[in-house]
Image 1 (cartoon, rainbow, N blue to C red):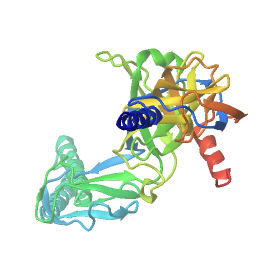
Image 2: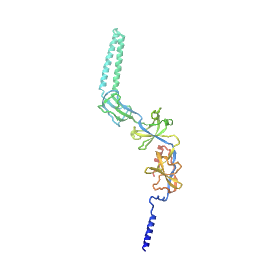
Image 3: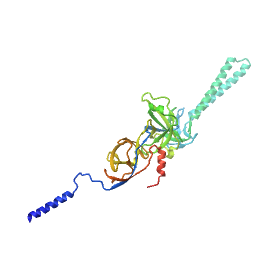
Image 4: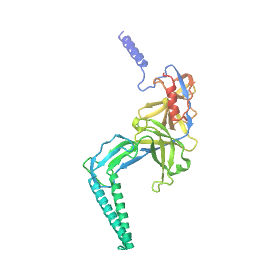
Length: 364
């Protein structure tokens, strides 16, 4: 009886062990999947280059005379109008110079008038009269110069815009040519980038480009406005400028000085792209689910550039696969596929078209 009891207990333990899952065993796929799929597609390669936003027009406000600054009624961020007074200098020295020039001009004119009367009476020579006439002309020129200097004691804004830097304060001494304020004009800004010289033959004024903010990923459509007529010898780079219309102050455009990317269309037949919503990530790995016959397979890939709704595939796909859109986290490798509904997409759309399509799509 005791032997039978031991035999029954051993059989029970063996049955329990057989019912457990072996450690490390891959679970069998559970059920079938219904998925939406799309095929990778070829699209023109987009080349991106570091670029800087610059004001369409900028100026430094300085004076041509020396003098103590008495007033600066604006500061950084102030909006100014064309012709508005932005800097005032102590004009005491200039006014004194004008008074001296006026006195010298009056004296020269009186001398000339006396010699003119003497010359008519024969008491002065023609040479003396010519010298007096020249002295009058020199005095008039000196007076004109002194009055011109007076204009540089009051500095005005050369155009409407904003103050970006204030480099002096009231009480400081202003020196000729030393900047006091820096201004940028309202309206247009430009994006400046240096691109490889070999692209120069494929770019021309009027070509469409995209300006992208790396952090916010905002994109702005623009056109090439200017190409440098020569290549930078040291780095073999070509300067490209693109104009953006709008108001940086209103937030519709990047601020001057901001770092952006200038994206231009590359040459050749293009590269392979797939829908961004097909990506799955596990740690540092990026992959996609593929419909292989009647089963699902996970494929690891390497991606490159991004654009709205699409990513570039650098390795892992050939282009004839069917990738699963918005894959469920419950999908398993080898799982049977009951239905695969095709979803059309177009990676070649411009960023503006992609964003417009996204806004027009109904909410899920």
